[in-house]
Length: 137
Image 1: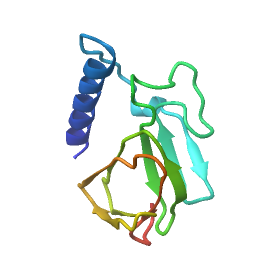
Image 2: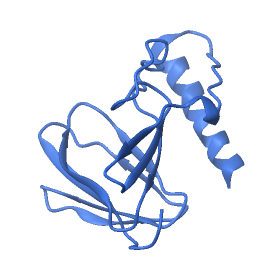
Image 3: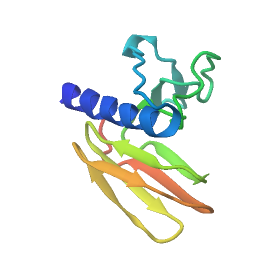
Image 4: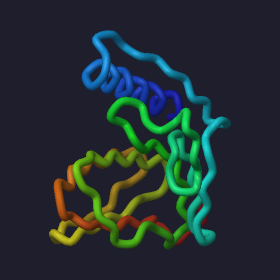
């Protein structure tokens, strides 16, 4: 499963680098053990690839249009409270368990293990996401 995720991710990076920045593909390798670390209230363990939250690295601010790429491990019942998104696409890939999502437009549901959610919230949409299962990280 990890190899599939890596291949999908590399394909997305290839397309983003090609479409948004360069006329030729860009390849940059950031190994998992070089990511930052953010922890929140005992419910979140986040490994950001780029500067995000408490993690800041001036050499890792973004990759073209890609601003956030986190490996988030959310404790059962934990999640991200209502928050806004503007002018961005949000892609969630659930590797284990499920991710419950709701927004202020009345949309909601559960993204299950091995599923992908792509969200284009536009402007003014507020959403919240929680780990669907009450089980461990």
